[in-house]
Amino acid sequence: MASAAAPTTSSLSLAARRAASVAPAAAPLRRGGLAAGCQPARSLAFAAADHRLAVHVLSRCCAASSARGTRAIATMAKKSVGDLTAADLEGKRVFVRADLNYLISNGAKVILSSHLGRPKGVTPKFSLAPLVPRLSELLGIEVIKADDVIGPEVEKLVSTLPNCSVLLLENVRFYKEEEKNDPEFAKKLASLADLYVNDAFGTAHRAHASTEGVTKFLKPSVAGFLLQKELDYLVGAVSNPDRPFAAIVGGSKVSSKIGVIESLLEKCDILLLGGGMIFTFYKAQGLSVGASLVEEDKLELATSLLAKAKEKGVSLLLPSDVVIADKFAPDANSKIVPASEIPDGWMGLDIGPDSVASFSSTLETTKTVIWNGPMGVFEFDKFAIGTEAIAKKLADLSGKGVTTIIGGGDSVAAVEKVGVADVMSHISTGGGASLELLEGKELPGVVALDEAVAVARSKL
Ligand SMILES: Nc1ncnc2c1ncn2[C@@H]1O[C@H](COP(=O)(O)OP(=O)(O)OP(=O)(O)O)[C@@H](O)[C@H]1O
Ligand SMILES: O=C(O)[C@H](O)COP(=O)(O)O
Image 1 (cartoon, rainbow, N blue to C red):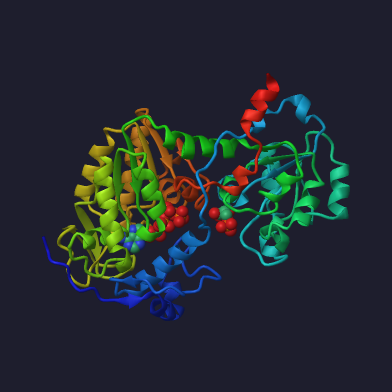
Image 2 (cartoon, rainbow, N blue to C red):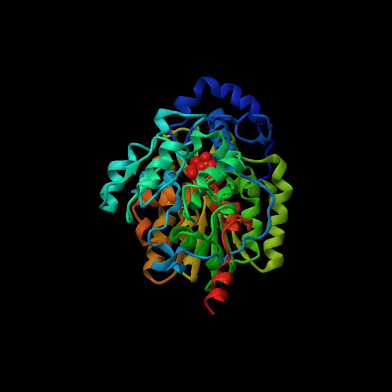
């Protein structure tokens, strides 16, 4: 075993200062660059000397940590839109909250209210107006568009709506009161309708006026079909899986996945780790990791997670080989080395072929698999091979009856890139929301909905 090399330490704040001049060239990524409003206040130490790698990870870190909270275990049995009969619905004004961020790129379903982006006030480029033609085409009816979210004009449009019609409100985040969950604003939104359907899973981790506030004023408040499916898989199938149950966790940093790993260690039989976080585990085991991403302050945590896996009888596999690069760039020179032989100055950006083979044969033994986080820097083709191979393996297993769940964000992007999204059992439409569910947290947009048990009782 190679001895641990002293890391070349650079701080995130230094990296961020340097990023100002290199960010565009350094980040040809799906959501690259620093997220607006993300201040490089933390100074976690990296082994990575390459500032482009540091910028890349900082941008991921800001995105991942924006929605963290300390909430308890999710509850599941929510009254569903399917519990509502024609008698409940005919002629009723139904306030539907959807998440168009996902729908926009994947072809929309019916929506009355949604947000798009993170506008500060009325911002024309975030208007929902461009959705109307496509939405009308998909629904086979002419969708009516309101230029506002609340107010007399909207009320007038609502009052003249015939049965079986759709009115699309303007971007609900044009009002700052939305994200503040302002009760007066929620009341005004609710006054437009008779009942509420929440189908915005991607926003269910936000306690906003249109996701949580309105439920105080609208009865019933129920889960849409998409939201229900997300809960069925990300909570139901994960809590009560067909075994063996494997979890694959990747992504950039162990710190952003601690909750997910700890929660999954309670439930799974096999845990496969990939992505940038593996180097913190290697280093914790005394291996040299060169210029790879390492969270120095998480070495003890990595050791304790390994111990916890052992204690729980979970078979935890780290990649045996890695693809290393001489810089964080799509055209970097690369080579495949055993995990224990990463030279100084080189950084691991993907799992290697031996790891793909051993992960694949392990996955062959499973009946349920959940995947969260890519195996490497899949945004660069050269380092996407491990991620794509795992995506293909899961597609193959889906065909053999294994339940395959893809937990949102970049893993979904990777599966879509490979073109196998359709064959997976479940592809989550939420990044932050799916992560929080997998961490075992309650989502405020879900908690606020009526309990299914009340329906069952009322039907007796
Ligand atoms: N070896 C590595 N070094 C540095 N970054 C890596 C490495 N492997 C993967 N990444 C990066 O990790 C990022 C994804 O991590 P993240 O934890 O955000 O995944 P996710 O949970 O699927 O996505 P999201 O946060 O959007 O839900 C990708 O941008 C990828 O480039
Ligand atoms: O894109 C998403 O993850 C959802 O639409 C939630 O968006 P938000 O992070 O801006 O609340």
